[in-house]
Amino acid sequence: MALLDALLLRERRAIARAGMLAAAHRYDDALTELHDFESDRVAATREGLRAAAIDHFGAAAERAAGRSEGPRARARLDRARRYVTATLRPRLHRIEWRLRVQQLCHTRAEHLATLVAAAEAARAEIVAGTPPPEAWSRGGQSAIATAAALMGAEAITADDILYADDTSLRALRGAVMAAYPDDLAAAVPRLGHEFLRAVLLRQLHRPDLAALPMAECDDAEPLVCLEQARIAQLLGEPRVARTCLHGFAARAGGHRLVRRLHTGVFLAQLELTLGDEARALSVLEDVPVDLLGGRPALMYGRLLLDAGRAEEAQGLLSAIVARQPELEGAASLLAEAERLATRARAL
Image (cartoon, one colour):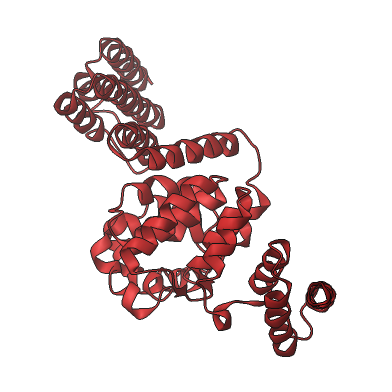
């Protein structure tokens, strides 16, 4: 009993000394004090010391980055990384994330800084308990089932992808490539692991987490511009999305069909959101009619009618009704086009 009491006393004293050393930011010395002890209390204390060290050096890295002292910021971040354990990895990740946001806002184009700022605001709301917007859940998940199978899981979460290492992401490359036409998919291997992470996070309905890694990707690549546009639209930034889609068209040789999404239709929808019907109509005029889905075709017909081009609208809508007679709203819009076209011919 006396021996046990003596051991407990030694442990308490070691913990107290470790606390004093940590207060002086001597974290290595503090951990050394606990080297000879293995109780649950010491394990918890050790983890707490490591967390404090990560916070201390992480904060120093952020201050250095704020003063544009890149080398000092990297050195402090490297010090923080020395104390990471598996359970503390998310803690370090949050610090690294803030540093990445800070760097991006200082180094990338204004529209990408706007995109990331919107994402961070949305993420803060979710962390505070606000449910994600319902609109986020409407996007396709073409790569997710395949990714889950490759990871040997029934389902995957945003955290699974957010914290996935490069090896895990590389294994999911094929699932992401399958979401694009072959010629565009050929670019995926050179776009890097963060592109894969961002695409998967978007498909997991977390554009707030996808924005930063996608904004860091090389936007000289058409696919990067397209994915940035998709993320921006989900985050309620139609002007940013429009800028990114213009970038896609410039780099891809024009608008095109990407699986079920035609980028010209996407741009027209953004123009309508921004209140510019003339530009939306101009964009749709360049989209082959046979590539228009039912709802985009109705949008095109409505725009033609509003522009006073009833005969063109009648021809378009007649073809749409013949092709998709069950399409809701098509018959009534065609009837309106026929009335206006008849009136126009009578004048």
